[in-house]
Amino acid sequence: MNFLTDPAAIEAESMRQIRAGLRRSWPENALPIVERLIHTSGDPLLEEAIAIHPQAVAAGMAALAGGAAVVTDVEMVRAGIARLRLAEFGGEVNCFLNDPRVPGLAREWGLTRAMTAFRLHAASLAGAVVAIGNAPTALMEVLSLAADPALRPALIIGMPVGFVGAAEAKTLLWEHQEIPSVTIHGTRGGSPLAATVVNALLYTLKKRSLS
Image 1 (cartoon, one colour):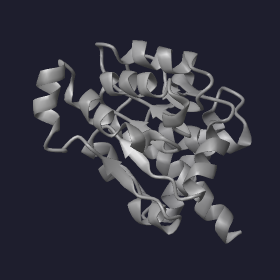
Image 2: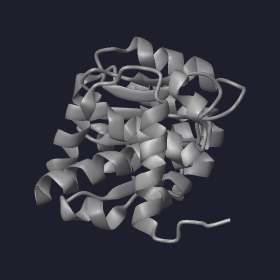
Image 3: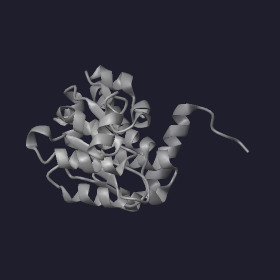
């Protein structure tokens, strides 16, 4: 059996197969997100669960192009984001889960560490791209904080994974149509997928800057 060994050819063929298999009609600007989510998951059936707010791509790209920070719920999301490419636009990735105050205050407040980290750094949400790939409680806290217009993110990528609270948190996110968002309905999600959406936006920005 012959295998492709050229990385560019492998990616191009992967994207060709993914696009050929799409069952829904997507806006052209959303296709890079959809394609890369399917590519990262290796699951064409994921398409049925993907939800992209009509303003999500434009809002996310405008924020990133303007040097907005990306704020994540866990280090695994942070590690998956193309930080050097983000830095080209003046942005950085922040995860506050390891703030030394978090464990003690989480116990005192009766919250998860992810919720506590966002509550401590609520000001970081304003105008940021928030990428959540692990903790449903983090997404709930972000939505609670974003009720204050002064703390509202430019885009929320809400992809917590799991069987307790994840689907419900993402449903609530989608109900907040005043905030541009990208999500995957149901129990599926995860840190690699949350990072993939950020990288898809950065990839598109870089491509436009070179054209």
